[in-house]
Image (cartoon, rainbow, N blue to C red; front, side):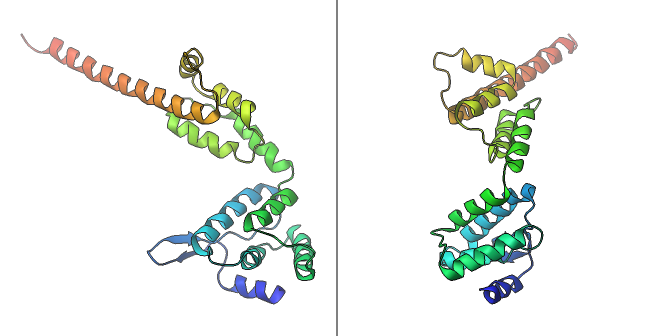
Length: 213
């Protein structure tokens, strides 16, 4: 298996973009050395590459390909153990996702989760549109350990107060995080459109008032 992994890695350096038919470029993952803060990015890159380039590959082939990008640091010992378990039949992954879950469990630990949770608690909409805030909130929420009501409470805390109050005082307040995302975005868009229209009308009134009689 070691020879297979080395051959896979020799096929291209981590991070290099490859062009598939149709002109779509897909970046390979960077080498992962076991650093907990990098595990999320490595997993995302692997998932994307497999989805775009390796759908027809067997699970064994996908796992071997991912192992080829796990090198150095604390990851070496874990990798060697996994390779031995695979060769002996002691472990068998039913999907690439299962392998990546074991990787996250081993290297994500509580450190990455605590970093993501701290980032989530610091988020504030400020002057951004709700759409921009929702996208950043979703990114920070992934891997933070927040879900359900605690996740909704953090979202409500971070959004601007005016929109939060309107939704909470509405006849049917949102009951899920997806409803909060959707309805908050719609309210924010309506408010911004109304504001632009008012500024346009105000400009017309001022223009008429300043015109010579």
